Amino acid sequence: MTPDADLLKLAAKGNEPAFVSLYQRHQGPLFRFTLHMSGQVETAEEIVQEIFLSLLTDSRNFVPGKGTLQGYLIGIARNMLRTRLRQNQRFVSDASEPVSPHSELFDALSKQQDLQDLRSAILSLPPNYREVVVLCDIEGLDYSQTASHLACPVGTVRSRLHRARAVLSAKMQKRIRCSA
Image (cartoon, rainbow, N blue to C red):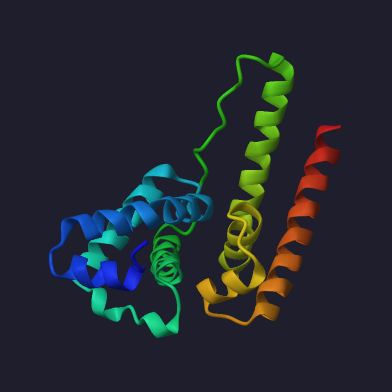
């Protein structure tokens, strides 16, 4: 497998297969990150597109010695998301889970509602808490990978994740009490 830095150099020189390789390698994780952070498919798609366009036009800002390309791209996504958050002042989730035709309707609807409630709770977290939940709990990155992507110490990741989980737990417990 060709290293990202080499593919980026080739893509910067106009090598389309190199750019396609980079896109295929990093589009999925970037899309999932931006989707979980924004709660909006359209926003996620737009930001991923903007990230790759900026990568094409100005790839010199990536310094391989400072971290991975994926970490660099997630950093760009974070900045773009924060800009949109400031502009919109609020993200609203429009994602929903399809109902499985093989399950009981009530169970499927209940599970769908639980997932929507969890998504809403995650989206209501402050961005710095939401980032660690998305990267650690949803994307499955470990603390050191998350710290690298967010350019912060591992201890900061751990404390933010602990606080975020506590807030999510309280929100979900409140929901359960209200629906009982």
